[in-house]
Length: 205
Image (cartoon, rainbow, N blue to C red; front, top):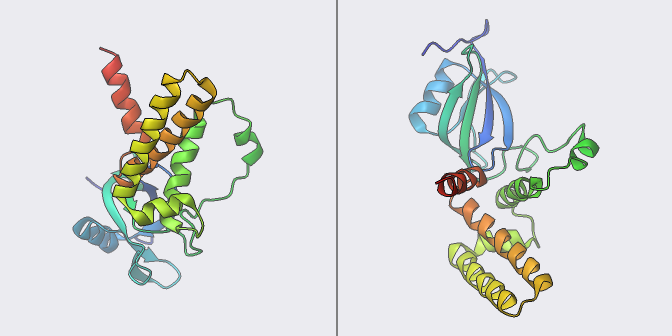
């Protein structure tokens, strides 16, 4: 491996949530911060304004556990896959990239399954930011036992709706079950892509 730093000794690092695949932030690393990141398995960067190393979450507690570090074909840019312990942005937001220049166009895309990706990203955001009054925040604060209890309840409701041959009620109960499954997947750091890939493998046989 021959990572190429620029004339200032820096390389851009795109930090991505390993589970939701959301881009959290873009920062810079020098050789020392990259080495510290590899050694500690937490993100370290180089501040161009302060001209010093900084450990993400050192003061806020919002550390980022490193799962993998990938480099591009030119070896002059990095993608750092992480499991975040809180918001990535200094504003308190889950991601520094929360606004869109093409919001209307994105909203009008005809991908009927895009809601699953959006829901996965929203759940990740709720886990990081923990907004007061959010039901998702409540589930994360109560923990895995509460999440599993809700899955059991929703699974039971699906069975009852199907037994009663009530398609209207059934679709709502399935939607609730899917939501709670996605919450548990987030708690377990299991991505939707991984589950869908497994589904493809199993039913391709």
